[in-house]
Every structure is written in structure tokens, then in C-alpha cells.
Length: 154
Picture 1 (cartoon, helix red, strand yellow):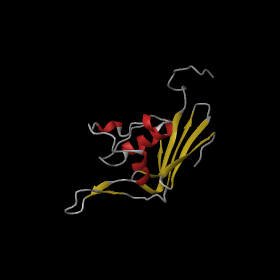
Picture 2: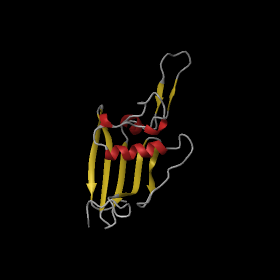
Picture 3: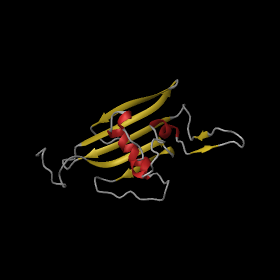
Picture 4: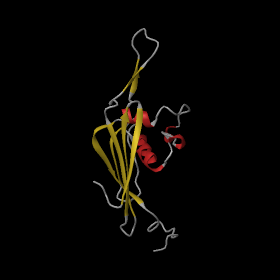
């Protein structure tokens, strides 16, 4: 095997599947995107979760929170409304009480929840690398447990 081979048929590891549980509006069950190492087109209506899945993969691969830029494909001038915390809580909107000056963020989950991201990659030699992260709150702090495996974790 040549580590520097750039042929698309054999170069590197490719995404086999991505799983999310309690990430963004993907709530209370495991949602799986099976690419099986193939090029894939992620399509859907507005607000159907396309960017949420891309951001889940970004979260697994980019190590430092301050270097992540969520919702890159939106084209919206005001970015930054999506954060690791907003994905954890499943923020889906704001509500303003009549006559009130402030708004309340609508959430699917509270600090007692857990959130899991998992992606498995394989190469042509059938070697596997699976990355996962588990998020949970301790007091007022969002904690992250990182893991890696050399086999699929289904």
C-alpha cells in the first residue's frame, strides 16, 4: 500500500456512516446517514437537518470549539447562532411573551440529556477508524467524552 497514492479509488479513509443522537433537532433516537464510502449528495427542504448533519461531522473532526464555524453553507450574513450548546439542547426557535422585551429560547432537551456523535470511516484495505463524542452537563459546564475505535460501532 502506498500512503501517498492520490487515486480517488484507493486514497485515504472515506465516511462509511454517521450517527447522531440528541444533536440539534435530531431527537430521542439514533439517526444514521449511510454513505458506505461513496460520494453522496445531501438534499432536503429548508430546515430539514442538512447543515446539522454536516456540523455534526465537523464537530467530530475539528478539535477546538473556537476554530469551528457552524452552518457554513447558509450564506447568512449573521452567523454564529449555532453553537455546540445550541445543538446539545436542540434549540429550534425563540418565543416572546406578549408585552415582554426579551425572548425565550425553545429547546428539545435540558441539562439532564446526553448527546452522541459517531462517524465510522474505512479504506480500501477494510481498515476502520470510528470516532465518537458523548456530551453531557455537569453543573453549568458542558463536558465532552472523546473516543476512537478500530472497528465499526453500530
